Length: 513
Image 1 (spheres, helix red, strand yellow):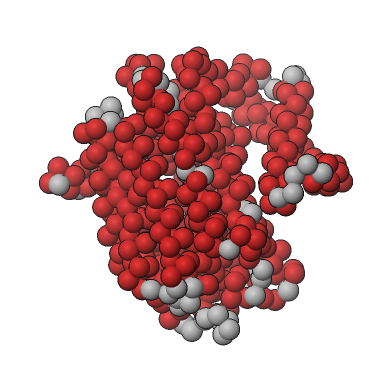
Image 2 (tube, helix red, strand yellow):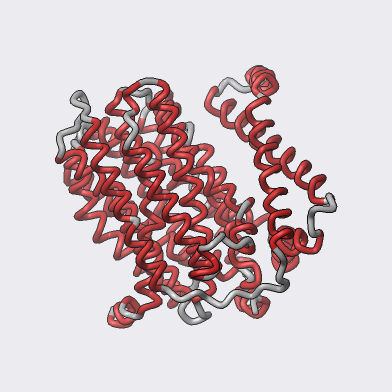
């Protein structure tokens, strides 16, 4: 333990902890805290969990990560450097989005609910962009010897941020008098304004850290950067147009599925997945056509979008399917369960103060312990073994939620359950972040890590958006059993990867200059 503590007092590790903290702040403001807020307003659970789709920005951030990697942020990049300039700008956007949410009362009608959705989408987009930059800084600032502990303290900070925006927001709202059956908008407003102020920690840290050395192969002029930005904007507009206008086609597709599938939730999930895939393919095709325009620097397009992907397939070609499977499924059990967890606590009769108290006490200790323990165990036993342990624990802890669903309200069992959940999540994520970091080529840090983390969250977040409907259909007990079963496939994949020694991290480090 002295060795672990010695890491925490080094500036680089302290800065990483603080950046992890502000990276964790937005997540629960989109998921659990917002869910409880909307639940008190009286919005249906099936509609509440749709708001979690605002976090799909985390799953598509690979699309704009090349722009964040290469395109300078006007004024900010010139004053602070590429990484720090972008980071400060998006942190200001995050603060603005949280303030927008705070100034919106979702009980004021459909218009207010729409504004809340727009603010939530802005928060998801901005926080996903912040993650791109923090991930890039962590990898570029690390060495082979300290990457595991740097990932570990990042997870500690991240989980502390989640507790702050989860338990902290609930403490403030509950203290100010809001409750089920006695909704007080001002309580949530003040709570979210305080959460916006916590982003000042990130702003100060961004001004303190050093700009990491970045390896840029070529330098381009402003016209070239604007050309790449044009391709991205056209692709986004195409994606939105196809997604919005494909309603009739998707309705027909849903009807066809219903002839062979009786599960409405599965039909909805498949329909949305196909809708997203069609919109994404259309956006890629249109972007490809636009990229051949004389306005676009072809060499830059290849450097920005093609080379990072080509490098990944070159280095991991033989195990690409296994790699994608592990990354896509590693957090599915945790994320799908987490979207409805706070709704479950409130359903069981716990007050906001009780939920926040347990999360603050037991959750805080176990969050710190899980993150640091994960880093230590990775150094001693290797990444894949600890990833396997984390995957098993994450699935098993979901069964504790199932037990509580059948036993009724119990404060001591809630403490046990949250403690186990935080410990397993911290341990699993410390190993997983180290795993992804070692797979990245440092020539393409921001882009490749964004691709990995996008794959990591896409399927779980799509499925998580339907978790409210699943709860209404299955009940909480069967829902939690299902989320535990969702963790089995990745456990089998990790066992297979260990058996065949699938990933050569030493070779990956050699390939990353």
